[in-house]
Length: 137
Image (cartoon, rainbow, N blue to C red; front, side, top):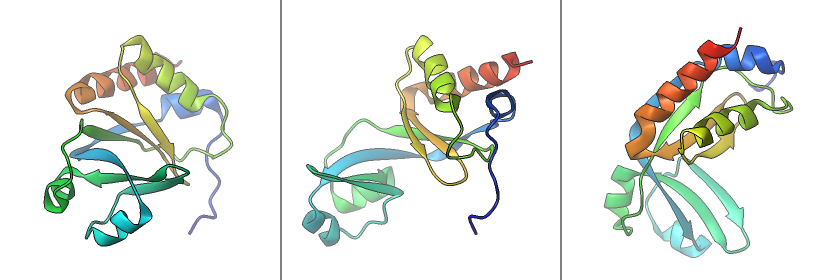
């Protein structure tokens, strides 16, 4: 399943990143392993840290689990298959977003990079990424 080679060329990555804004909103939480096990949720992602397990949960599951309301994030997936060893791709993307004063939490998975941006800035972030991609010649 994970055999194909991803793109490493920065210019190709930027030109063909094809950002897609997902429909759902998400919350980030830090939970103990015991608290997470007690919840009936299926996180989109999780990461073990010394302080606890960071979980990314859809807004609907947040409500279902009766977790406290936190700022919500929208997910933008960069559809290009980027190699995990590609250099400078996320740096260029996050710099462009920073210039528009849009915060971002980036996650690199095996095939794609995923950007969590504040829900109220999601459309602006998407436009910024389309502009960045179009500016690459």
